[in-house]
Image 1 (cartoon, rainbow, N blue to C red):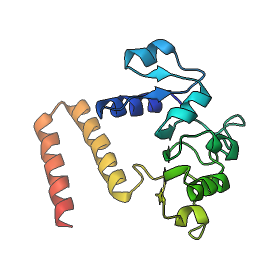
Image 2: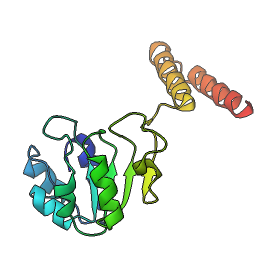
Image 3: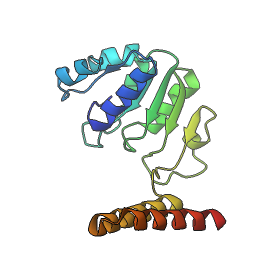
Length: 179
């Protein structure tokens, strides 16, 4: 659900894994979908046919609790839900009910209505839910490497001294391995 930049990239990867990909996005151009072998379908068709539903949309009044009791009832039994878009696009109480009823076989979430979610919520503790923090590249290690790479690229561009930049990179990564 959602076939913008991120949804399109997820679709490309799913196609690479041999999956038949359908998508719903009322704003997506059909020619872009056809170009990568994706079939644009109606919202109800996406709900009833999908084995996996991956959400890629902003949180707006129109997408708030986009997945709810009514939409879960229309889903193919055993569907798997992935939400790495925005907290609030899923009615979390309705998701717990759908998981308990077996409509949703598994859910993978890194965004929640309340950030961070309480550690003792039914959703986070549910045995069929994989819950991770919405961190992406926010670890200290990732930020340190990113900062160093940006700085190194700047040095390289300004000095055009490739060897010096390579030595700096080697020293940085050698020092990180030792610590």
